[in-house]
Image 1 (cartoon, rainbow, N blue to C red):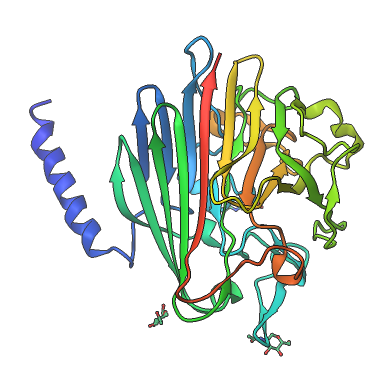
Image 2 (cartoon, rainbow, N blue to C red):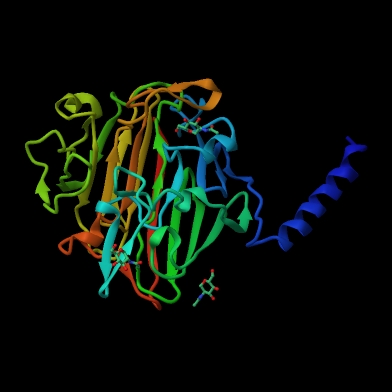
Length: 356
Ligand SMILES: *[C@@H]1O[C@H](CO)[C@@H](O)[C@H](O)[C@H]1NC(C)=O
Ligand SMILES: *[C@@H]1O[C@H](CO)[C@@H](O)[C@H](O)[C@H]1NC(C)=O
Ligand SMILES: *[C@@H]1O[C@H](CO)[C@@H](O)[C@H](O)[C@H]1NC(C)=O
């Protein structure tokens, strides 16, 4: 031990010195842990991605409840968006273009002629700068998006903070400031949750409550039609807690739809979803200040090799992506996502975990 110490100190010092001088240029890809008691979260600055969330079940047994890969390299060639922070505009933009102030902006078309999650190289595929890391409290990452990146207008300064609060609570604070042009901004966290553990198989028997009375229906390319319709009397109605699998067979593939959250317009965070896994006793509540939530049951996950070599199949997890409505830039009746220079985009998510 004594022999290793000086070398370790030297290395740490070197990393600190070198790390500082390359900020903004060749930022290293690393992993950063946040930990309080037996609740811990690991994040990488590649894509500001959540790598793991470990928490106890009702008997105190620890499990990792988010899907992901074994190595960081696998995140670089990933089409699942496991744990990623997606932007500049999350979700789909129809035909990969939109108009703003009389200019048509042509975007990276990476999904059947449409734009998905900010284009072929969105915020989930770039290296973020580590601004601040305190292992028992928070990690703050920033990214400077340039004018024309993936086709979007103007420079955009983006900041994301992962923050531990109290016991077993994780908050995500996303901020973005346009520097010189108005631009749409819609950031989302694309974490895949399985409260039974990432290697437990299916979420069909989890119960979910979604505090949303309406959805925005989509066409066969998953682009919103522009309608906003009630969920009442349809398999989309999760106003009362119900098993995810109970009516999933009535839908092609499963759930992949934007819910219009109730109680929008309030200045405070509102409860958006409650998920429970009866077997482990784990429960997750999600609160947000955003008007929409994309509920996705991993319909497109086909035999992806994940952590520990476990093979993830359809419905191995759920994603609960709070955000604005998809394709808002092309639907004037949806809440606007345009942010002007001088304004700040702010998106907060709070996860509260319990087990009993
Ligand atoms: C990247 O992923 C694609 C499928 O998504 C696969 O065909 C390709 O071989 C992968 N490339 C590398 C270098 O792993
Ligand atoms: C986008 O494409 C249209 C038509 O192809 C073109 O008129 C327009 O100038 C392009 N927009 C930008 C910002 O380059
Ligand atoms: C926008 O970004 C470019 C390159 O990233 C930089 O040269 C330019 O000064 C920036 N402009 C503003 C107004 O921040």
